[in-house]
Image (cartoon, rainbow, N blue to C red):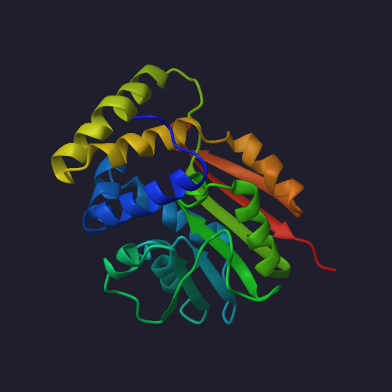
Length: 233
């Protein structure tokens, strides 16, 4: 499968996630051995939510990260967005969370609106990373935070051969067997291996105006949590 870019990639990603939506959560738990649950908990813990804050979850999908945020701070005002209606309707548990269909490259929100902008497994899938990050910067209030959980280009280490085998062989087999969609999970691996490094994403966040940008590497160097601030005026 050739690695797609630009508008072709946008169409492929939207169609693919529509196809895998019914078993998306199950597959995430299966592929990570349940570690995706712990990573979302850590992401929200590091977000340091406070009562009354306004939160935007971009590319919310089935809403797992948004619900984790609501569990952590039930007095936060959370808006979940995704470009894919199938993903957002695959889950029924949206009580206390506002929902909106929205493109991460053109968010339908005013400038300086949210205290926290967060995403889980979004930025690797956008066709223009810089535009997506600038949009997140735009809708954040001065002093607001951004937090990003996503896969990152795997780092070479002792486990690299095992990681490559798992990524390139086992995960596509899981996709074919459990979701009848090998191409979706082949894309998952391609998008990870072709994504920027954690250091590159850190640099792009800084270029978009974020300050105090740092990250935490997890899952044997295959996932990262990035955190940054929008300076007060």
